[in-house]
Each structure stands twice: as C-alpha cells, then as structure tokens.
Image (cartoon, rainbow, N blue to C red; front, side):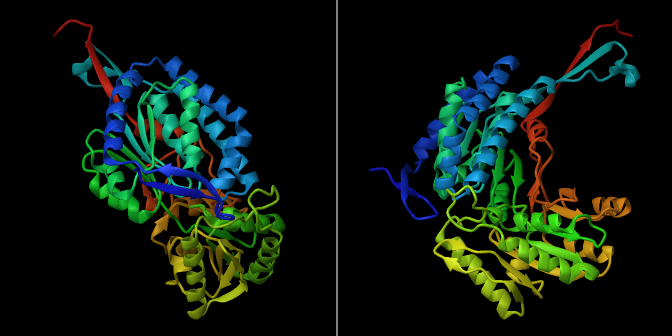
Length: 463
C-alpha cells in the first residue's frame, strides 16, 4: 500500500485528508509529462495562455469562499487573512495575463556597431524549459500562483512540490487550472518526501528551480542544482524603524502590532525587530503593547481572529523555547503570551541580547523584540546587523532619511511609512544575504523563466 500523510487542522487536530506521498516512479512520470507538456506550452499562442490565466482568476473568484476555508482549515490561517490571500491570487493571475501583453521581444539597433549596418536585429524571450517549484505552507495559494502564473505566461510547464504542512490548496488549484484549459501535464502537483524531492534540484530535465522556504533547505538545494537556474525566496527577521518625526503614531503602532502578530507571525517579512528613536521609545512601545492586546487570538474560522495557531506542535515548542532562552539571557517581557496547544499568544521583549535566537534568527512566530536607538545612522546599522536582508520598514517624514535608508539598507526592499510586511505582487520581491537569490514578482519571475533569443537578419548588401 502507498504511504500517506495525515493533513489535519492546526486549530484542533481534526483530520482533513490523507494525502498520498509520491514515490520515485511518480516523479519520473511527472517529469516525463512536464517535458511533453512543455512542447505544447511553448507553442501555445500568447492569447491562449492569457485566456487560461484569466479563466483561472475567474475560477478563483467563483470559489473564493472554498479556497479561503481550505486555507483556514489546512494552514490555520485566520479566515479574513485567507480570503485576502485568495484575492491576491486572483490579482496575481490577472497581472500575469496583463504582463503577457507587453512581455516578449525588442528591436535593438544593430548599427551601433558599423558591421551591423546591413542587419536588422530582433530579440524574443523564450521559455528556458520545465520548472521545478517548491512552495511553503504559510501562503499555500498565492505563493504557488507566483510560481505557476509566470510559467504559464512564458509558455512553460511546472512540477510543484506541495508544502507537507498544508497541501490541499495546491491540489485544488491544479484542478481549477485544468478546468481553465491548461494543457495536460503543464502543472503536476506532488507530495514528495525529502529524498525524492531533492531530484527537483538535481534532475537535468528541469531548467530552473523556484524555491520558497527556509534558508537551510534553499541553500542546500542550490548547491545541488548544478547548471540550472535557481531563484530562492528565503527567510528574514525584518526590522521596522520608527523615528520621532513619524506621523500618526497610534496608526503606526497598530500597523506594527498587526505586522508582528497577524497569522501568528508566520510570515517571512513579519515585523520581528522594532527599533524606536530614543526620545519616543517608552511612549511608543506602550502604544504597541496596547495595540497588540486588541488583536483577537483564537479560532481561525472566526472572521475577527488575527492571531491563530502555529502550524504544528514543533513550531509552538520551538517558539516557546526561544522565548524562554531570551528571558534567561536577560530579556524583559513587556507582554508574555500564554500557550494553549498550538496557540501561542503574542510576546513582546525588550533588552534582548543580540545573539538570542528571537533576535538574530527567523522566529516565524508571534514574537516582537523592541529596542531604542539614538541616531538615524545607528538605526540603519542595527537593521543591517543581521544575516538576513529581505525587507525593512521605516517611519519618517524626512526625505533625506528615506533616501539614505534606501541607499544604505542591505535588503531587497524598503517600505516607507508602512511595515515591511507589505508586498505588492507585481513588483520585484526577494532578498539579499541569507534571505534569497534572484527575484520574484510577476515581471521578474517571467524574466527568470525565459531567456532572450536573438535574430540577426542581413537585409542589406555585403560590403
């Protein structure tokens, strides 16, 4: 009999499904199917690919409630956030369809070189080949769409490894795309154990690996990937900086609290480190604590819930252990969250040692560290004092400070007057240092999944 894995609700452990684990032979068949489908996809007219993308968006729109419930059940994502993720996935398919209208070739001047005078030069972008994709549990729909939609747009096929903690949304999406007209084999969705999944990096049938997940796994797979293209979107410990000239402090405090604790902090660009200008520190931190206390903690099926359960017992155990370690090392809890099964309420810590795991590593849980700074230069230095560099948020009304931060911060993106947790799906997204390699975002992903092909056509007389 086939091995399978139980998919259960993080909230109460109720069984949702038994998901079969893929075996090496299943991956062999998926790879062969993806290679056949690639030959179909690369020849599919752009208008046909655009129609598929728009039909997928329409299908999600019709089944918005169903996909939202799947994510609330399977990933423990609060239902309001889950429905917001469906809306983002709809937008991601729609934007990919629009990018397809403008994505293609160019007409560079051949006669920049005198030898080019008798030539006309054209370029077109061609898909690099079948894509191997690995998606995480925390955005089990939209981060899958961020791999599948650009692949469809450029005319490629995908073999996707689902997140083992929350696999059901990806399987449902595959069915929806088949109904939307995606050719057979163009999306193969498998639940693969790790030894089998490593072939997504090593098998030469794949031209590219697109991975979102933990830094340790991502860099390991990149080392195995050989000559294939690799895009890694990994973890972070994002900082938010609040200067004393920031406007509307109550709203800023509310945004910080939401960015730190929504979905129990299981977001790679959640606010993990809060740096506050010293003259403002005590007053503003009290505001953040007060705002955090207003966040509803509990059942993800309740539309009012913001902080739901952690994805599994191991995650809850780890987060609690890191909090205890920080306190032993001298951290002072300003708010200490209690645990009930997988539900860990928000914790806010000050006087955190730099080397404490809750500060220097990705906590991926409902923990916020707070610290003061004296000068803007010090704030930027503290943000950069991390092995990660995904995004940062800064709150200031001074344009000079904004441009200095944009220049100096070692991150993939700087968000001004909002939290680093903001991501707009059409814009470039990714990190530096241990946070990633390459970029996602629809246009960037389409470029990563394709390559320019030159046509150099002699139309004039030889000289």
